Length: 166
Image (tube, rainbow, N blue to C red; front, side, top):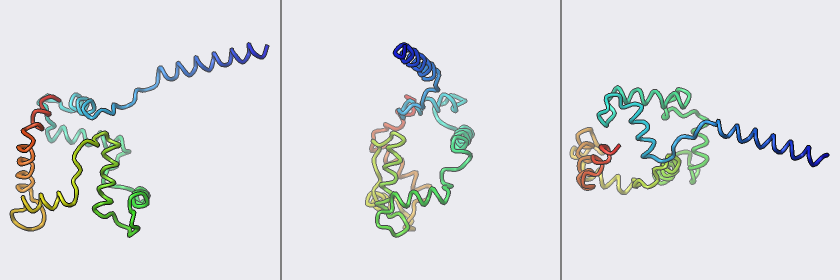
């Protein structure tokens, strides 16, 4: 009698679990290309293949709503303390360039874009030396535009073709 009862309970639990997993919400896609295509479909209302300022604003609002209305740059003191505890290896209370690079790499891994080139402090200095025409130690909008155009040209225009594919 107890074997029949155990078998019945097991069958009922199995059916309940199967039903619950069948109706569970699907997880968000982890593939960056699929995610971008999904975002383009949802927010590119004029279907021109890029996000116009109004479309970007709607996308930004959606992302903030997913994070509880917070801008990602507005970390709580608890979040900041957690990041420092995890990434401040030398314990000085701030993140050095190396520690920031480690943080960025982990964030990229979480987003699924770990294959992207990491910008090292040396690479940043090299870019600054090449494109900082006014010598103020920062890239203004014109200098950033020149740097972007140079990178696109060195990639053979792949970024432009990638936008058309999405």
